[in-house]
Length: 272
Image (cartoon, rainbow, N blue to C red; front, top):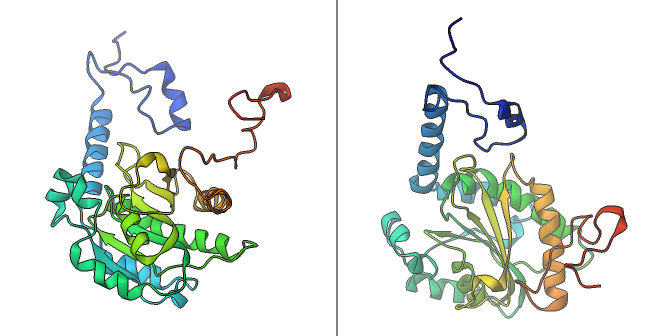
């Protein structure tokens, strides 16, 4: 009998549980052609997610259509110090700061009211993630905030072009917000070019570092659901306001199995 050209991998049956590239099989000493083509397609999708520009007009229209955001007025479009996509990728520091011309606009928006929370959207490293997932994520978050037992005074929603996570600190600082939530496109993987990241920072100001933030990642239909991300984020927001902090000192205890392990034993990693 002739040997098959493509040799199957016994782990192939596990692929229905994960998007990871396992059990690909082989053709001689190489990958099968269809697996190579699938890799090249996913690589192209990841590149497109980084380089394709975000449709800001459509995004702002989607956000403006959310009933909970309508009372806050028009979505504010801002830009970072990065002049274009190439500079954004080559100079991360430019993406972390607002363009100087945007500061007076935010001063005009700030009021005597001290906002509890500012929501900032930035294109980040995946325009696809922001285009597809920002509006439903905001809808889930606003619903959770509305149903909370304590009120949340929201600042005008801002969308930043060529922005990185830290640009939210400057936006919220200018708006005099106590906390900021940044929704941003995460660095695309070969199986997840549309992953949205959420970053929470208490008392945001220019110069905050990553250890002072909390992150919820992989928010997308095939990853963490919008409702679950909103539930976790609301918990972190409430704890952040109660403890007056964010970052490594603020732990996410929303999962039911964080306090105990098998047979009811105490998790030694958590304080008693």
